[in-house]
Image 1 (cartoon, rainbow, N blue to C red):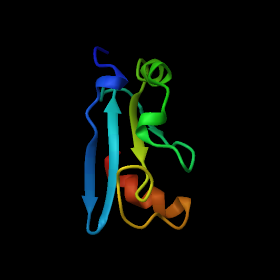
Image 2: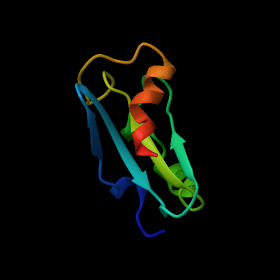
Image 3: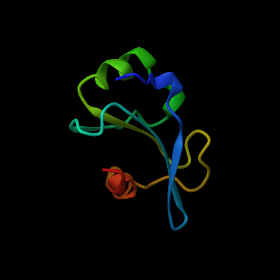
Amino acid sequence: MNQKYKDAKTQQLIQGKQIVAYRRLGEKTNPILLFLSHLASTLDSCDPEAMDALAQYDDVIALDYQGVGPIHGPSARDNRSNGRRCSSLC
């Protein structure tokens, strides 16, 4: 793995009116690890060294929740809604 979390590009997945911001790190041939941070966390509040360590063994997809951080719009009502928003990333 050559890329570091701090250098990973923030991307957006748009589904209708819903937006999910994410960063992907690690080899895509590795198992996917969907990193769901705590409620008020953003992609920029993750520990870059911890994310780099996770990406040594997994294809890490870290998410920003809509309505938290730079992604504006209504936040999900529950974790199931967040999961539906993110399912097309995997």
